Image (cartoon, rainbow, N blue to C red):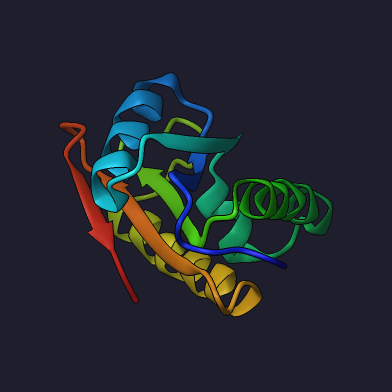
Length: 131
């Protein structure tokens, strides 16, 4: 995969919930000091990537990640999770654990890519998560 960090792009894998779409894009732009963010959405992606049960969905998500990373020549990737998710109805503690596992999964799959998590609490306040 040919990428470089000179790109003005970043890539986020975000929940499809519209509540956090713009806040996640804005946070990632500020985090990476970029102007453009590719967004890959799915229902509770932290759950999908942490449980690694639904290989078909994981491969679809990863194909989209790879298209973004290659097409935009970036090495920046974030997975987003949020407290108010109606799809992943577990405690915030469990969601954060899933987010950490999803970060680990993506870091193992994309070894030359910066992978971070973005957590949104109930007040839509974002926190960068690194492992």
